[in-house]
Image (cartoon, rainbow, N blue to C red; front, side, top):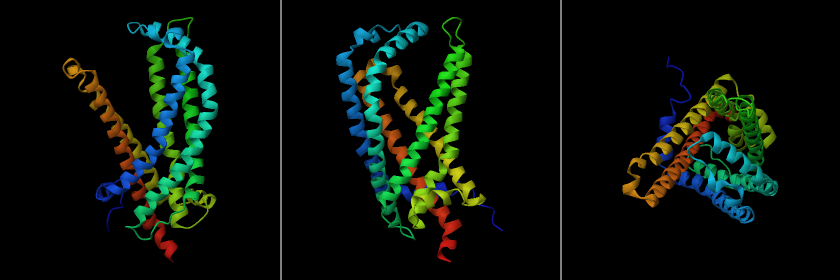
Length: 304
């Protein structure tokens, strides 16, 4: 009898399948950048508007002391306190608008990727963007909750280890910051898989978003273990991609005098683009892996 197939053992084959079909990765990159480029442009314009009202000289950001991190921290805290009302005013309308735009663009883009993927698969994946939009809104709500929890935990770590009255405990703060950051990252990987598989269930099993989300929580131990394993591995892959991008951007620093500032900026931009494209590629690989495991564990049940 053959040994049971682990969730990650088939990923190499899925990576090759997706690599041979670059149009899938191109579509994934395209719909994300259709949202990302205008969003970053709006953020840049709003930042310029705020800086026109409260300049760097007025806030003191142009006089940050890079030689003393404690003095720099105090200077940054004072500057951020001045910018906070202006930034909060922008975020009140920018965050809801960006969330709505993300849900719509993601619903259309991800549906197009899955439809294109379904051209080469059986059963084929229909184009149902409304269902994807509803489930993407639920995914975004969970993501916002995880981010809020992480920010609150960082505030707790700073309040308990970096006090103005006594000597700051930098080691303790760093330990808690690393521990909590990795903890919330792992929690996201463990909790987000139902919302990751739900869009595929809505398309493959032709059910409503609510039914798809309910079914994603009752997939059985074997299927669920494969999904959790893939989600955790993809989280580790993202961390590895971040490290690789940081190494690529930092490697030329010893030669900064010979290369010049413009070249270093181009290298950093190239490393960032590499990370974004590679991350989107692995997103498509994960989708393909989910489809294959669905066919293995539930495809027969649906056909019968």
